[in-house]
Length: 457
Image (cartoon, rainbow, N blue to C red; front, side, top):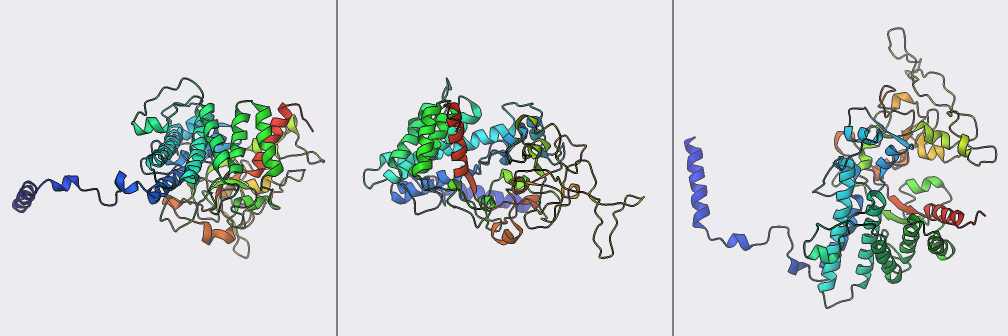
């Protein structure tokens, strides 16, 4: 105790005997506004705006699992996916599946705050560019406004009538803004500026082009039911843009297929041995919670409804209103392995567990089903034949259970070394790029607009 008192006395004495010059020194590792007022500063701020696309940052509000740009928890609210895992794990996600949604739900709040963080970083970039009188920053300004258009599009799409935060609001620290209606006009203004000022191609993967901006502008018009203008922009991208479908559907979800001719705008993720939050932070939950991958945590399981939707007629066309009349064959509620009278699994003469008999659905299916969802009896991303229930964490007693596994977000077995980033609890941070928009999306959006304008052909 005496020694502690002496140390404290010496510390207090030292503090009061020094000058207060230390209070005027910039923090170590921080840059002052003056230091940023140059081309390097503009590019640093613009890079920070790009980095916020994945939603991950240090001052996360809500959960870090709901911030990713794939908006995966929307599928949990819809009929495409179940929460997965166990009922007590991530209870606020169970609330979403039950439609018990509040503004304080940490998934709803997490995505909200992540998007506004992106808007804030873009506004900081724009304000810096506005202050500078030397140099040409038109390219950076066009990219910044594209990003702001994207962030605000997401806010409008998800939350209805969000508050619009302009660069002037940000400069004056006036963030408490009203939300009297939609902000489509502001979204369109940023995307129109991007169309007019971005180049047709970029040297760096991940930077938007004028074609990408035009695709998003068409999507913005589609969301407003302005189908004629939507079709005009989207058809221009189809007829004159640089995009095409990949020969293989799987290429959209592998490292080898990143930044392909089908990628319109993608988050450039990287695997780096867990040195950073690489990959969709929300996606860290969405790897199998059992099975050969050694991963976690068994969330985001495709629903039986989604599996049924892939059934087709002999002509390959979907069944539309009748697809859910009968489930395609699955092992929902079935055991994967044979057990003895005491409930112990049985091994064959080679030491392999003996599986129960199961035959996958033998009817007509859209082949994309097996690149989208893991079914029992079907190869699972190069890890072997999916054995079904034994690879699924949840049980039939859990509300958010399913006989299927998520697949697109899980890297291929032969790309593990270049895509795997270890997180906590065995979670994986996949290094696979996430396509916010693919050329396939452009085609589908254009088809929707064409139907709505009476062009069924």
